[in-house]
Structure formats: C-alpha cells, structure tokens
Length: 225
Image (tube, rainbow, N blue to C red; front, side, top):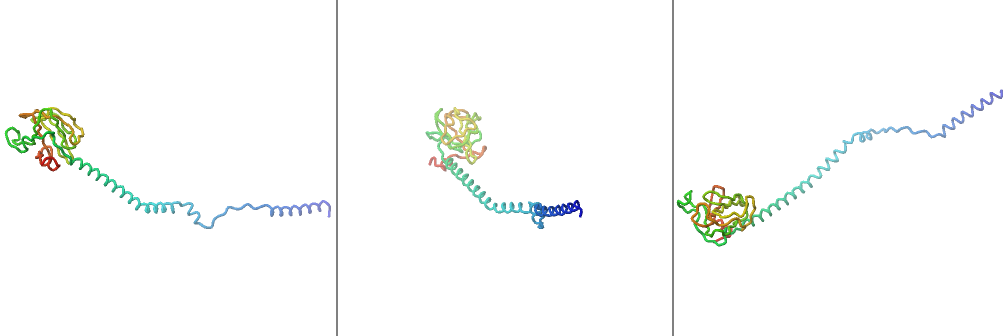
C-alpha cells in the first residue's frame, strides 16, 4: 500500500475510535421529564379544588364557638344594663319633702272659685318667702319661668315620665336641662301668680295634663305617714 494511503486509513480508524470514546465519556443531558400522572397537573392548576373546601370547613367549625361567645357577650351586656336600672331605681326610690319645715296647706282636690278649674290641682306647703324649695326626687329640669296663674314655676321630669311642678316661686335656682338629685335646691318659696299668701303649690303629673294627688306618692316612697 502506498504510504500516504496507509496514513489516511490509520487516521480514519483513530478518528472513529476517538469519536466513539468521546461519545461514551460525555454525559448525556437529561431530557425534561414528562409526568405520566395527570393528577400532578390537576392539583397545581386547580387550587380551588382544595382551598375553598378547607376554608369552608374552618368556618363551619368556628360557628358554634362564635355563637357561644356572642351569647356570652349579650348576656353580660344585659346583666350590666339590669344592674344599672336597679341602681337607678334605688336612687329614684328616695324621696324627700319639697320644703324642710312641713306644714300642709290646701289639699289636692279641694273645690272653690279660687281655682280656674274649680278644683285644687296640687298640695300646698306653707312657708315664708325665700324658704328653700328642693327636688323631691332626682330628675331633669324641663321648665323654669312664669306660668300664668301658677306664677313662677319649675317643672322636673322623673323616671317613668312623671313630672313634679313647684309653683308660686319667688326665685329659680336651676336652668332648663339641668339634672338634679334628690333634695337639690331648685327655687325659693314666694307669692307669684294667683295666691293669697306665701306658700309652695306642689303638683305631681302622670302626664303634662293629668295632675294627681301627690300625698300617696310621698307615702309610697317612705315620706310621711
């Protein structure tokens, strides 16, 4: 064989051998794995399959506890309001006479021409001009000025909607909107309006137009005999 041809054959054989050896020695890159299981894709692409179910279970499980906590809160609030009403009732149950030196004058219901209605609408308490007039029980001042034949009047509204009127005053010691406690000074005895002398004309109303005998109310609240 010609020397040149011999070299070509050797070179070709060596090249083939090196190519085979190189292919065997070089690591093959891993092809992307394709999962045969469609459940993987289903779970990853559909988060709503499990998330809402978990949330729903949590809410259902929390409802009894939430209802119980709400019930306890409502019960506690009702108990607190009940105690507050009881304290208020105890405070309102304390009554006093409207004047310190009690001397009764004309009683409720007395008839005569001296009263425009023909009947006395309150209980009179004798007194001197300037004597202190006090709230018989706690309330709010709703009127404090001259009021026709009753002269200068202070009106208080109390729990339950009842009103007490203090008439023929010479002076007012409170203002409309004031909250007063039992025994609070609200005015002074006088002779204003239709009166024959210095005294306090006291009225008790179950509504603005309905006056009732106040004496049973004093007795009911531990004042008087």
